[in-house]
Image (cartoon, rainbow, N blue to C red; front, side):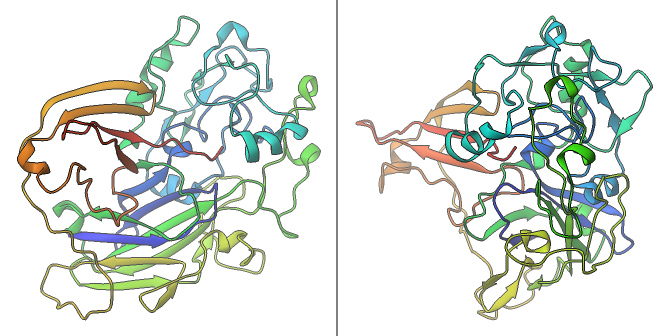
Length: 403
């Protein structure tokens, strides 16, 4: 059974989408944004309230998506600095640091706007190295997974780094952070195991750094941990907690269900998975608080969080505009398939499409082009016309632009 999840987030937000049964038990993950699901921002070395900056390398953001993380019912070894038992140093980790392929050195406040808004590239040094961490000797755990983007373990890394990727079980549902420029939808095909749970509830949790208001107002010096030896580096990030929306639906029945009201919010410090009921402390406009999911009107329905189920085929299509019907067709097998690693999050596949499959066009068909996302990962398909009628196609997983 196919299900579509519709929403429009603000830019640079972290999100998780998941399903629960009628008893409130976690059934399946649908999507989690890359910084949380792949890059491990919620389970990494340092104090949880280290100051932030664009692609900051340290400080586990345990408050990012706490309701989703706790309700999954899974734990992972807590990651700490390999060389710093006190976890209180933002720098000076050279003896246990290896080349970094995503995060940047901490930024001073004057650098933040230039880098985060304009250049969106790490400043010097370009060969920045980070302490990838190690398992806490105390055996403490985290409800968030460690990063799984590291291609190999360096000699300076802890041996634990070599098993980070094996511990992270979210790669299949990790997706790039949505741009926030337009409404989006994610498609999931529900397995028989999921359908066996009966009617479901679809949840989405969304958060964004430094989203303050008068009720959730934090100070750089007193509410965050400032490394006294590197006091100029980093900006505050605490703000309003994560916000959760929910919609109940029956996957066997065709129909759309949406909500414009948020169901509650998470702990500001991520301590538990408590869903606090709505109150007057959460903003609901200007892209802040509950308005991190914008109001969308589509096919006559107005909502912030919506679910459309195609059903089991017994319900007639009422012509309400919901549903996209991509007709499947059998393609001839490709030839010359080859793969090349381009980067930690990108692989290039090249192959030739038989002439009979390209009789109408020299351009390949890349799935249902109206869908901006899949239930597995967001992908782009690009092809360049050549003299040969068999174009080379590159599939790549798009890296998140959010810190």
